[in-house]
Length: 150
Image (cartoon, rainbow, N blue to C red):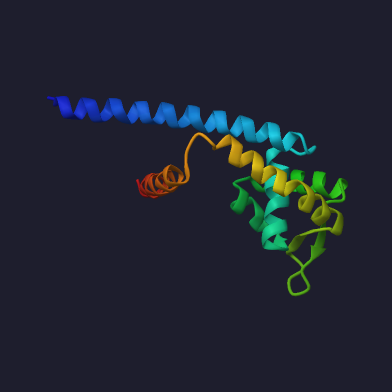
């Protein structure tokens, strides 16, 4: 027999899931609008931002860092390469590995747009003050780590 507490825990968990999903969708849609204004989609921006902040990366590892399949990464890298924002470089130590590297044009582009993007994120997440954001970060980390293990 289910207790009242178990039913309430289930209901509140479902409610949290729905609200979390809707909030993510709303935030993500606004971020996507911002990124599209720079002529990129979210995955292109994620790859470019990774290379801009972390430097050259093996293409095979980019997918894990920006949560994309290897086939999708190849497509995104091709598109960014056609835009002359990144280049492929062979690894001198292992011919099986190819690195992605941001070009000077890519750096200049990110130097121009990244501060604007940061401001857009600040505005999009402006519904919370700094202390609320810090609490959300901790709670979402806790939720994510728990979900990974179960």
